[in-house]
Image (tube, rainbow over all chains, first blue to last red; front, top):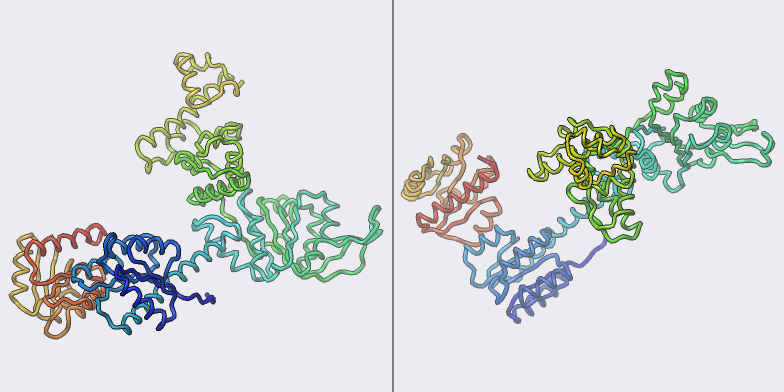
Length: 474
Length: 126
């Protein structure tokens, strides 16, 4: 904290003389910025506007007294240091004040030197506390800036690993299920490295056909093949001095793998139709969601390339292993999409959050992100209910995955109130049971009702209540 | 029921506190010597100490500091005939739960003791 800000002291006393004396004395002897207030009420407004470092307040004042002011200030900002002074103090009062969080208790009349000493120690206390909070914010904000949201152990460990690996030039293989943030990790690796000033080159391997991928990566010389009417710089050369990110590396054809191996081994590229090679200084980051070991077994991936890539592996945790972060992530995406779509802020109902936590996120964070994006776009109210989450033709209905038994076993409802827990289990049961019944009869409500042993009207009432469309099963 | 230690350089004072608190069902250990009291806290389970501030060899504040060092969770009530803001501030900052002024009447003492013990129960210290 190199910025030197003059500490601010607020003096509160109902006696004008005392205020003037203290302000003058403190300004002259310490160089602090001194403000004053003649009552507890005025002090509260000044504190809100100015956020002083130290408050020096009298105890006996008409209206709000010093002890009440102390409690209010401690509750609103524990980093602020409060000193009480009194002309007619009792020990009981002093004990109460100290136990309530006062930093010190001074009896009037006091020695100027002593009060200056107490105040300078108080200023120091506030400075340390505030600096500490600031540093903590910066730390957590840093991960945030890298794009990671979450506090679960798995994620925190992964981020720590990324931080450790980032500054080196070592080749990194990022593994993890689809939607776990592999590209985010790659960008973090690059941005935390000394190469961050230069842009990282990203290549989406499966997006490019074999021969194009090859010429894109390594470049070619004019006349190397029909249509090569000028020299082309390959991406490896473009990434010289920076990083190259090979996304979904498992999908590159074996012929390109051979060439890639050469780059990794020799740190040089040979453009098509070019006799000489170019030295390049490129940090390679690759990612895959596939089982490379199995691909090696099937002969679809070169083993030697695998070992070249697999110097350092970072595995991104799937959403199931960081389930405690789901509320945080959901909130993050909600705020982000509200902003993006220009909607006033929205919120989840407890049920909705619960449903998000319980959902099996095969598509991981990306799926969660998409579900929330859709909710923000389509929801009409400012609260998001469980119905908003899965409606609108989401894939949820297409892939029924819960058996009846599961609906009751898997719902972790023990921490909810009885009524909420019951509602939750009932809703899940009805959803699964009624959906299955309608599916079995192809959406025929009468037949489904007969099968369930109930009247058609009763079934229809249930379908309405749980918002199940019989039409969607025909 | 709790294990309570009381330390005062005046024997009668400790006897009186002992009588009052034993009637409440507590086990009370009375001391007039600082070192013996400190040694007792080191060896035996004690929930609460009631310390006089003016003692023979040390001050009650010093005794409090030593006891809190060996057993940070121990409850403490300071009891003094010569209260000053200075000692009150020191006692509270060292972790004393209460700072009372002599003469203390029976009900006040009983109340303060129950309050400190209850607060410790809330924190799951017993």
